[in-house]
Length: 143
Length: 436
Image (cartoon, rainbow over all chains, first blue to last red; front, top):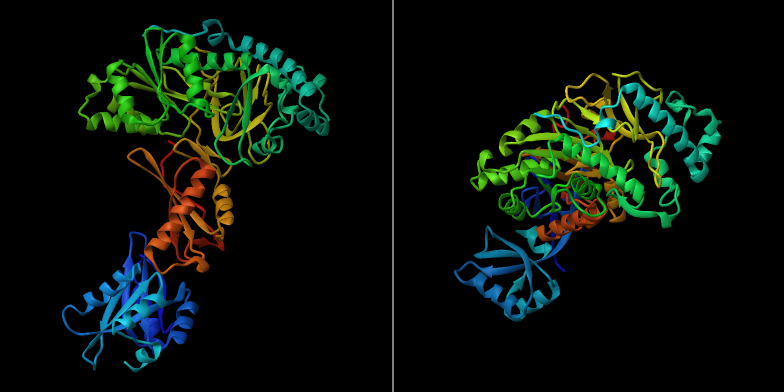
């Protein structure tokens, strides 16, 4: 598995998010992608960063509940219909998806989609067979 | 209004005669318990008291107390004073095996309990002309059975509705002209709101009175219920350990509950020292059952904080009056009429693999208790999906429901986020206004 996501439990309290981004900034961690799932009671912050170890330690030391989650990162062309194509592949392979979020690259003409699915290996295999390229933590560092 | 009683000669007996009667019964009862309950005999022996030392109610203070912990230690048969083949009924409090109380009744015990409830119904204006809607829970809970039995004794047309199914409650009430409603005050308030929503005005509602108990309620709540339902609302008090509802009841004066003193001897003690306090003092209420055969608790500490007063009552009853309980001397909570101990929540969390870091938040919204439990997330169980976390919350809520008998809303929160004061977590936040 090649792409790691940081997952952080966030209480619905004022100032929590800014506290987290502050800690990351002070530790010189760069965020590549960010997504929040929120409910009435709590939020789940999902981050792709350039330095997982530093970010994890800093947030853990600050008392945050944080864990690393394996996710699938897939590179797709920055054109209409490209995401649909990728999702169709997963659908055909009958792989259930929990959530996804996307981010744009600065240099390349590509978008990146982060997928959390029931079976990462199967999803990567199906997407690769359909001609998609996966991204790794090493790729993220270069972005 | 014509003054009426269910058992006039007892309910209006001169105080000196009541005390004489209590003394006679106490002497007999202590002998019965000493001879038949080894558990209590041991307590008496430890204190160096024998039945011969108890010559009347003035000697009551010599007897050892019983507490909920004794009931737990003696579970299930340790305080039973009659052979099981002479018992006809069991009732039980809600709660875990550890906290559960099982009480046994002979036919005689059921009869005197129902007499107590019948007195409460008549004091609320009930007669054989009335339709008594019993919306207390039926089953192990004493509420349903007690008022039901009392209703029969009075000759009321008794509707054994049990609790819940409000639409059906309202339909029966309106179609069959219920005149007296028996349930918890919060359920009465809820029914009042529902009737209002369905467009019924107080003068269209056939009820004239309500007998409400099993949970704390303020006079403010009483006025609200009285107004919405167009009734007079009477308080009733009791606990499974002593029999059930009907240990004391309100008369039309609504200034405290008359204790059925021919059956229950009441004391107020200092909860810290156990010292008996003079009449009119605020302290913990202690009951001695004078007539019960199967489960005759002597000096049982209720943990309810209360005041007793014996003033002449305009209703003509001479029984001493207890104020509405003003609090508890232990950590028991009564939520939606169900007894809840914080330690039960702790047990569930430990069983389910969580640290016992939690906070119970109780409120009363539109006269209904809300029950929320905040639980600190176990880092090992932290899921990156919303469905994963809500599934944990549901599974915890379900385990608590099995333990407590009522359903909490469980909210997982971040580790170490529950407020701690001086290093000790605040376990209970009760926002309800329960006591006047």
